[in-house]
Length: 318
Image (cartoon, rainbow, N blue to C red):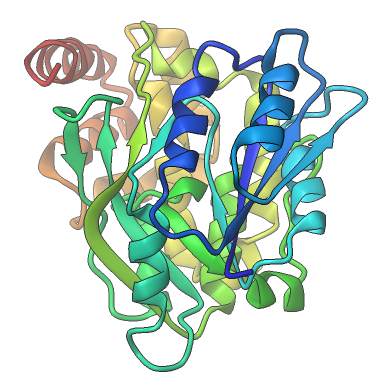
């Protein structure tokens, strides 16, 4: 078996059909799919059982008796995996038909199997969605810098990862720490990798949902989960890159009109605040936002929210 595709599922009956159809449509056929059903209460389980019976693809269905979150569900699925590579998908998104085909082909480009293969993605489910491009890198170390600095996404569904790399280095998700689990897993994978390949082809369709304030997702409990995942990688990343990573992790608190969120930004990872004034690698508008926040210039931060997030991204880019 070449690839084990892992899909955690929790109350996803409305979006699951599109994901299942995209799995069925894969041109590459040497793969298995492992569904990790996390004790949901809707029709997802029966849909998965039906797919495993009729989909014509090797399937494993792992069901949690009690809802324990995506991190633990993915761990259980990985324990069942038999593929040379691991791929991940979310139940509310969709794969392009040639995702696995192109990723597996790219893994062989250098002769020896690549440890990690990455690709670009499409924002929105339809074919007219905006293509999002990952950063360029030639080594895992360069990718690690890009991930830490916020110029490259670490979402699990953007990568094919060699399973031996994961097993030999004991890379797993931390149970109960579902916020930031992608970050922890992929940073550790790149820290241990010897080779990586980046494809600039959009192979995944992300079902973007824009809420009223991104900051509301960073509750104190979720910030604690992020801290847990961050602690698992902190020792393997240079100190300046860790400061960059902390700035990136807390940036959603500034995508808000609420001064309370701004004060939470200022007090969370305060050791990174001075770094916000000196960084030159980020886009000018992002550097300006964080620089203003580090000086508690809240009126400027609020103006950024309305002009950049609400007007430019919320209206012009929709």
